Image (cartoon, rainbow, N blue to C red; front, top):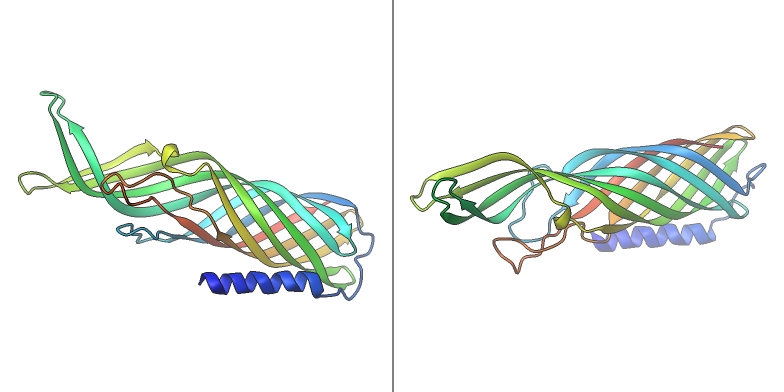
Length: 247
């Protein structure tokens, strides 16, 4: 899968460098600014042994601002920022210690932790946008770039199940925890796709894009509490459909 994604990104990169536009965009601006909303499915991969997910797919929504800087005929550098939340649902081996509220005696168990988490990111994408085809007010673009995300929140709802010393099944159900110390502070990804733009007038344009976003860094941190040699790992992949307006 990684080889296929690398090949797709490489081909799109070559297209961005070699395809010639049919016509230059009329009234190209040196600088444009706008707002966008993104919606699409995401997939979280958990490569560590013992980490499982019954719901790997989630639909996500993000919003933010975008700006284009003209660097050549039909070529823009696009950047901006957006706010995004990733949903994670997975289970993993877990070691937990309990203290009796009456006797203050401590006991510890190894079992399975089931987690539903929400992780928030402030993201800064940077990409090269090439308008490969222009017809009147319609424009088709190719886009290739990378993105950095900075974590600003990480919350989870956990449940822990285990077998006690008497062979009894026990469940500690639904308790909220903050997991910022178990999440990487920065994540990185690469993306590529196509976009469409329609000029309403000289100062206003509507656009939409379809992007493939591939996470290149682990978004979790630390090691497993039951098996310290196991690293906490998760990698996000997503398809994003963006709509917005440029001024």
